[in-house]
Structure formats: C-alpha cells, structure tokens
Image 1: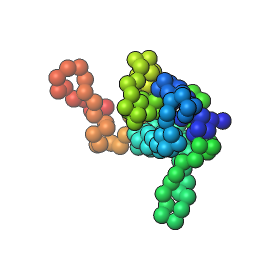
Image 2 (image 1 turned 120 degrees about the horizontal axis):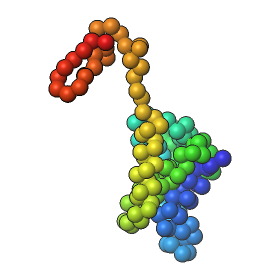
Image 3 (image 1 turned 135 degrees about the vertical axis):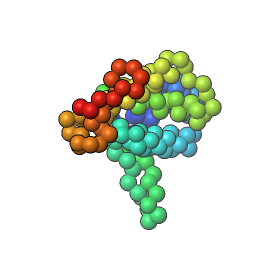
Image 4 (image 1 turned 180 degrees about the vertical axis):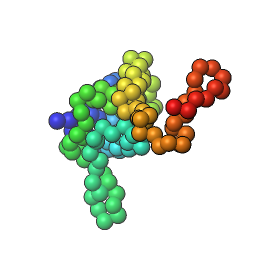
Length: 148
C-alpha cells in the first residue's frame, strides 16, 4: 500500500531532488508543503470527477484544519501511481523554483490524458428523456438536425 510519504518521495526523485536533506538542502517544511500540494492536487482532480479513491487527511484540531501525515495511506490504485507522482513532481518543481525535465513533463501530461480518458462521462443516449436536448444530434456538416 502506498503511503503519502512514498508518493511524495517518488515525486521528489522525479523532480531530481533527492530525499536526503544534507544533499539537497530542503527542509521538513518543504516536505510538509509537498504533502499539502498532494492534497490540493487530489482535491483539484476530484473536482474534475477523477475519483482515484484518495484518502484525504482528517481534521486534527477543533478548527477542522486537515494536516496530512506522511504515514497515512493514500489508497490510490497502483495503476495511477505514475500519473500522480509525475504531476506532483511538476508541482514540487514549481514550488522549489526548479525547471522539470522534459521527460517528467511528458509523463505528467500523458498521465493527465490517461486520467481524463479513464474518467470521461459519456451520457447514455438510450436514457435521454423525450423532448430534451439530449434527444437531438447533429448530422453531417452545417446545422442539419434530426430527432432520434
């Protein structure tokens, strides 16, 4: 099972930023920021209808602020791991003022395309109500309209 820490670590590696503070100079604040960035990215994607079953952080205090913890399970299906980590790597690069590599940018773009295809919502024409706009479709070129 992937934890949020493993996802963030993989994103740091893809962003060409190692995990050891002594080598890279990033702090615990950078790690906390990356965890928050993961939460925001997943919330953005859920708003688009891309439900990856991500487990958001629970509120930890009386003000209902949710602070993600590194050891929390992310609950993301393994097939989406690459799309999540590469897109998070792009966000981490932006956060740290770095330029992502072309490979990571391409991987993030392709992952986003895969997600948009996987979660596309195509309405079922057979369930359209009579008289609604869903019962009409365009044929050919121009404005020819036919009632189904």
